[in-house]
Length: 131
Image 1: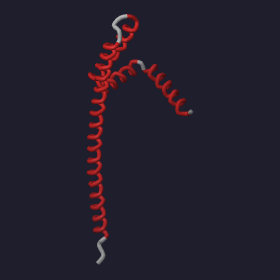
Image 2: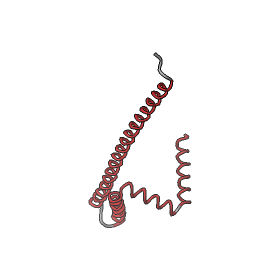
Image 3: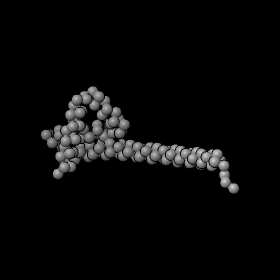
Image 4: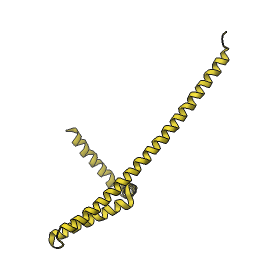
């Protein structure tokens, strides 16, 4: 016995609706997993940034311990150590988000130099990859 055409259409609609629902469920699950992965990677990047900051501060201490306190070498090594220490402290306190925020603010305050620097870097990258 043959099915009625309306029954076939209704069955096809039901199957299509079920397929759409399944696709939505899979998409939501995938989006959730992607969000978890991004959060995990963000946390790891933040931890790595903090570790780099700590390493920079440690290196500053090592430089201070193993270089003279006075004279031209002492002044230069002290300047390097201070720069490393402040940079390391900045990385530990602000992390990647702080760097991104500061960079954004700097570009907003100086848009023309930022564009020119971007063009210069693009030119140098193009030259380096063309060879």
